[in-house]
Each structure stands twice: as C-alpha cells, then as structure tokens.
Image: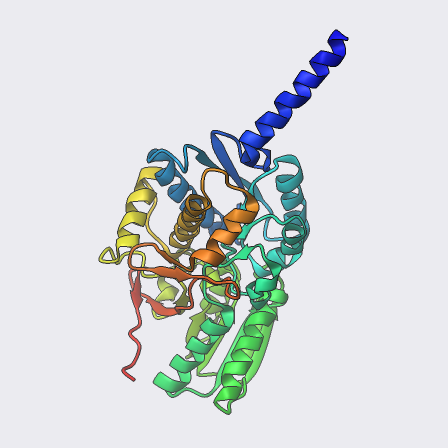
Length: 388
C-alpha cells in the first residue's frame, strides 16, 4: 500500500511540475539556459566562414548574457565542424538534435550542407536560424522552421550584372563557379540577370568543392577574353584563380559573391586583391554611424579583444541578435513553436539602423545587397550606386 501511495505521489508531483513549467520539457531549454547548435566549417578551405559566423553569434549571445540573459536564461552555443561537406553536416546535425538535444540550429554555413540538413531540422520541427547561404530553397515559408537573415544569391547576382553592364557598360562576362548546388544556384542567377538584358555568358569554368584546382577553368575562360569574370565559390580557390589570372595578364573585372568571405579572400590575395569586387548582404562593418554596427564592434571586442570587424562576423552577430530577440518575444515559457511564431507574428525587428522584416509568407529578413571593393592596403570600400 505504501509503495502504491508513493508511486501516486510521484506521478502527481511530475504532472504538477509539467503543468507549472511546460517550457522545461522542450529540448534545449532549462530554467537556467537555452542551448543552440551550429554545424559549420571550422577547419579546411571554408573555415574562415564557419569560425566567423561562430564568433559573431557568440558575441551576440555573450552580450545578452552579460545583461542577464533572456528571461533569466543564459544562451549557449555548441558548434561542430562539418568541413563544408554534406555527409559530415548530416552527422553533426543528427548529433546536435538527438544527442545534445539543442533547442535550435543556428548559423549553418553553405548551400550543399544546408540542402542536406534542412530537411532533418524541418522534419524534427527544429528552428533553422540564419543560414549563411542565399539559396532559394530556404526561402520557401512552407517549411515553417527556417528564419533567414540575408538576401538571396539571385539578388546578389542581379546586382553584379546591373553594375557590370549598367554602370560599367561591359557585356563580355564569364563565370567561375563551384561545381555543386551552391555554384549552380549562382550560375542560374547570373544567367537570369544576363538574359534580362539580352546577354549571354562568353565562357564558363568550374572547380570541385574543397579543392583549389582552378587551372583548367582559367584556361577555358581565358580563351573568351572576358571583360569581367563573376565568381561563385569559397575564398581559397577563388584567390588561386584571381592570382593565376593576373599572372597571365587577364585584364578583367573580378566579382565575387558574399559567401566567399571578404576578409579571408583579401588575406589570401595579398597584393593581387586590389580592385576585386565583392557583394555584401550586411551593412559596412566599419560604419559606426549605424547603431547596430557600433554595438557589434563593442560586443566583438568584449568577446575577443584581438578580433577585427568583418562582414562574416557581423552577419553572425546579426543572426545571434535576431535569435535573442525571438527568445524575448516568445516569453518565459518558450517553445520551438512559439519562438518561430514570434518571427511571423512580430513582423519588424529593429536592430538599430537595420530592420529585418518577416511575415506568415516571408521568412527572409533583409533584401539589401551592397557592392564593395578591396583596396590596395587589403581593406574595403563601398561602391556607390549610380544615381537613378
């Protein structure tokens, strides 16, 4: 009888605890913390992208934690290296969801890796926040669990061709792209922007992901004598291509997608970087007249005094700040469902001079694209848009 009574008491106590604190049953949530997971390239040819996103997110989380966290909870990040390879990313995401039991995934890097892991997160109804890719398949609001920050690759490629053809009057344009889903998304965007203007690419060259084998592509593109080469790839192979192109005196404009990693590309190029164009999807990281940028710089220094501002860490910071705001909107009894609904129902998120806007049929926060160029000293300057 005593055993039965004790069992009933235990069952009632457990039921009472569940009714009082329903949010504590959600994976990744305790009364003292919220845990996010990140699968990204932390080593290898794309490492600067994963480590940059990681540092930016951590800076935003540390800033929130220093102010007391969100509803009394500290925010933690578990990061795993996927080497920018889909199979490794799948393994990392499964571990983060099933073993580490994270609340959500944040800051994944790359199109092929996101293509492989997003269905896993969607099936498990796990938030997939701020992927570092502009691939169109992530912009379908029907998935229900994806929160994008950046503009699409289609918007970036349109900005390229508008600048090259509209502002500079160039029409002989070639492309170098990574031979996978990421590269082909970029290729499709360039082709659409060219077709809109009655133009066709004069040459195409490809290379394999996680290699720097670009010589064959260079020989193919060089034969067409292009006025400009647009590039969809990671910083190491892109830098190798540009350095080789300049050695053989290819006189062309070189234009890169934001995914390339601007600071890493500039460092790899060294003296060969001057004049190379890169499209960006976040504000200029050195423009402290923008409140968001000023706060980002302070948070970055607080997290790592040796860190220098850059486009990738700023994007990571924006993603982290947005996640913090989503948690705040979701309230004390946060669940994955009400965290995601916070974005669709709130609409506008003002980060200080930068507004991200969402809705039931819109899971992309920003649409802006900014063009920049590498300076002689390796720094960056914005390219002003021509007056309309």
